Image (cartoon, rainbow, N blue to C red):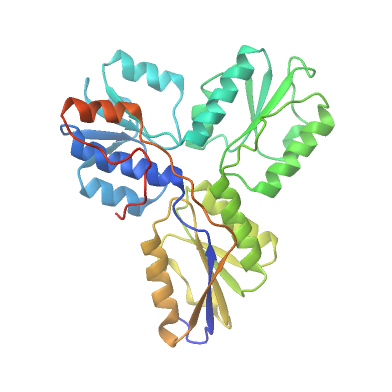
Length: 330
C-alpha cells in the first residue's frame, strides 16, 4: 500500500442493513433448527465472503429449485422470488423458509395491488437483477421494466391514464428521482407508492458517500460486483467528481489508484461484512495514517424472523432468539 496516506475517512453508516442481517440469521438458525441438508436458492445476499462462510457451516447453495430434492428444506434469498418459484416449491413439497427482505416484499405487494386494479406498472430497476426478476413475476403482463430517463420516452402502455410506478430497492436515489420526474411529465396521472421504495439503508449509505466524497481524494467501496447497492455507491462518488473503485476486499486495491492520494475514503455495500472493512483499513494505515469516521445517521431498524422458521423450531422443541433480530458475526 502507498505510504503517503495521511488519513482514512470511514463513511457511516456502511455495511450490513437489517434485511441482510435477518437473511444471514435465518440461514444460521435454520442450520441449527432443521435436519440437514438445508438448501439456499441463489446467494442469500450478494457477497461471496458471506456465502462461503455459510457454506462452511453447512448451507448448500443452488441456482434453481431443480437442484433441491423433493421435500427438502430450502431458503429463498433476501432478494425475493416470483410466484412461479413458490408454486414449484409447493408442488414438490419443499419446506420453504422465506428470507426475502420485508422491504422487497412491500414492493411485491404493491405490484399485486396495482395489477389487480388494472394498472400498467412501470418498474424502475435493472432487469437482470434477482429482485426485479422476482417482482416482475408477480404480474409479467402488466409490468414494464426501465432503468433510465431515456427509456421513458419509448414506453408504450395500453392506457396512459391508468399507470403506476414502482422501484427496485437498491437504486441510486438521484437517478431514480430523475426517472420518476420524467414519468410524471409524460404521464401526469401516474401514481406511485405512498413511501419511497428505495430502502432506508440504500439511501443512508448514499448520503454518507455524498458527505465523504468531497473530503477525500479516492473512495474505496467494498462490495461484490453483482451487488447493486454497492455499485450505486461507486456511481454516487463518481458523480460528485471523486475517483471511486469497487473492491471485493483489500487484495483488489491497486497501488496506482492511491498514487498521490492523502485522504482515502472507505465504505461498504449493504451486503458487506464489517470484517472486510477492518482488513482494508488495517492495510491502508500501515504507514501511520489516522482514521476518522463520518457518520450521517443512526440506524435502528430490525426485522422479525419468518413464522415458518419459528414453526419448524417448535416442531423440534427448540427456542429461537427474540423476533427482534440483532447483528451476529459470521
